[in-house]
Image (cartoon, rainbow, N blue to C red; front, top):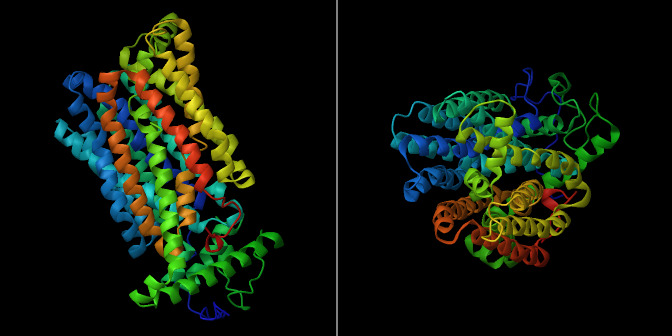
Length: 513
């Protein structure tokens, strides 16, 4: 049998994983790490408003763009090295290190007395963002049962979106009480500490553990992540006497769930044995193995296309500069009128953040509704259905900011409608699915390195889009820039239709391109 090297584990085999302590659930680790990722990504929106006022950056787009992209530059570096680090020390320890980096970056920002320290803090936070972006999808993909992988891998988008939304609301509250960007960074530091300790007490990926020949820990981790009561460590203090492939049904686990675990174990063992055989080949043998090389190349090209498409849809430019877009769309003025009518008093920064939060928050409802459908209808089907809606929503937003409608009540309605639709449908399509497919399509031995490359490419595209947006907005106007993003999304649909495969319900080792 291809997996004959995986010896039978008898009940007297030493156990080194120490499962007597309480362990953090997979969904908790993925969710909270993603929340910190979102807080770090969203804080820049409010921070830029505060920094613009303190340092008078309104007419200095180059400096404004540098502050906005400093985290992106850090993300590029973080994503570039985190794959190798995850292969070396494990996915769980790398996530723990990312939370620590996030804390350090936030503390630098919260104590900053100059723009240089703000930029340094954002760069360090960017290292954390890049690491989160690379390792969270890998960790979620390798730990999730195949039947629930789409749902678990949608949690990062929920966490990121929740973090961004929370950062908008916190910014609005902080500004209404006269606080500055320092308070926003300090708020993020609190959650980074929580993420650090929860990640510290989580389990590592079964696939990574098996590659390190830590079979006993791999066995326990698979059961832990698959059990519906996998926060109860007492269930995993027993090693079955029947061996690696013949496992006893654990307390709280149905026969159907146990059958699925056995299938996952078979696929994992076979896939890693094939990987071991491949790694024993000489470089000349690798070059001759055209099938393997073509699969990796095709997977990288498909995933690279999806990551670049995601950024050129304009999402991060819209997130970073939402207040200015909403102000141009006359939505901030409507929010100000509503706040003043209610008898509350505040200032422009608060109005801008309230408007941004009002537009962004409804997408969370959409994510919650769509997450269970990821495993029912599949990634490809959702992309092909939703991407045209994204293009149309940006078209509405572009029209609302045209010179013919600007300032009118109808333009405000179109602008609000366009942003609501765009934010909601992006969060269930081009938001999570590129990372889901990237983690699924790459083979196990190339997954971490491939994800590092892909996330570096994503952050490069992200940096180009964010840095160029204020210049393009100043030169051509928001309407023309958003129309360009709308056109790019139409080209994305053609790419998805031609090249992107379906992966729902398939074990990672069984996916074939």
